[in-house]
Image (tube, rainbow, N blue to C red; front, side, top):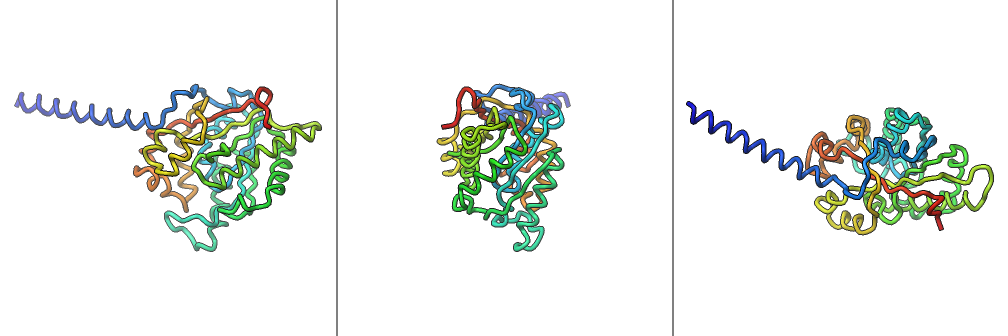
Length: 281
């Protein structure tokens, strides 16, 4: 009996050690050594008004920790732009007629941003997958007009050369955001643009492990993040329940249940740009 007990204890210890090793190896995939850990990127930057500029419904899932903490921890005014309704996406699972997907995903985005505490959210109707072909001057003017109205001191968007996922819509919205800020700087007036840009950055090791050629492209074209902050995993998980038509996206991308992914990926990463020290253009 004693030998059996010892054997069970030994086996249990080995299993726990292996499980722990797998867990920490998994966490390492979502760790960025260059990033300084902070409780809130917006709080660290001293932001009081924040505008996110994105391409698709569910893009806000990459930054929900930043927006949740900006609102509920720092008391900032928060706003978002989503350039498309996401009508060209695939459903996973199927929750409605495909021809209604744009309306469904628009509603999902508005509901999710409300759940985060976002004060206002514009969802535009540029073609999903066709943002680079849309009139760039018109896009720049619209983003600049929203900035003039909201007057953000921090703007959150995609790194133009990588778009966080390699999606051309993401890359174009990052580019358009920079052009809009440059337009405001050049125009002068009472509001000349934000003080800071925060670019959402994807975890490098996870992209290499799971991203294939697209992941390699993103890694090669995005900068190292300089900040890491808690991802508010609970609201991220809620977000995928709200984005019901995209609920299977994370398991399909990372081959793990959503809860397991966020047990490993519990931080968001950002590259910030101080526009006084590093102006655009």
